[in-house]
Length: 219
Image 1 (cartoon, rainbow, N blue to C red):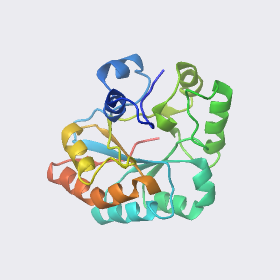
Image 2: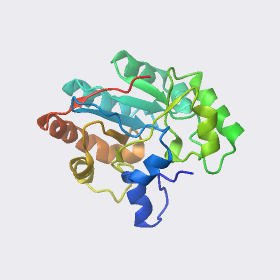
Image 3: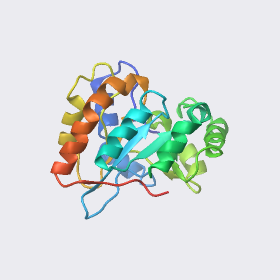
Image 4: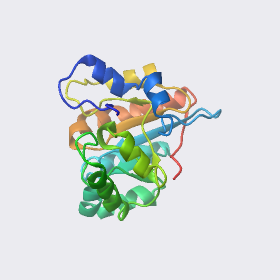
């Protein structure tokens, strides 16, 4: 059972576990995708929980300015609300992934209901990429989904959605944790807007100066 994404005021250890999943968790769940090994200095920017009418277009504008590709793990309910933004993501060459329909917590949701929620989103979101909401997914759910979906976790998360994450913290996380093959998590949500919009250009600029290339996940 994974506990990757701490939403409450829990101990700092939970934050550290979710920000940079340790080796022992990755070894316990080798069927999940944590990094993309390569020799080309490729990294993978991902954005969760959109599309959002205020935040996603601004992120797309920044990505376009740098000609940077990314992967957007979308919620089915938001795709229904904002189909024009969802279409823009794909039209501009980015990849979309399934982040469920209603963002269920895998710890608190039975297997059948959990899979049904993912399948409902799959009717709206093409491809085989799936990222569990909160990073919480149980072995029985993994077993039910892994034959059809590539279950994508992350190498590190910048915690852009947390109010206590101050300006500059996301860039600090990138500098501390980034490596070739890293899958990096950001959020295109109202809660993350203040931090991600102010820092994304600086983050991309830093990546480029270090010789990294931005690639989208393959579904």
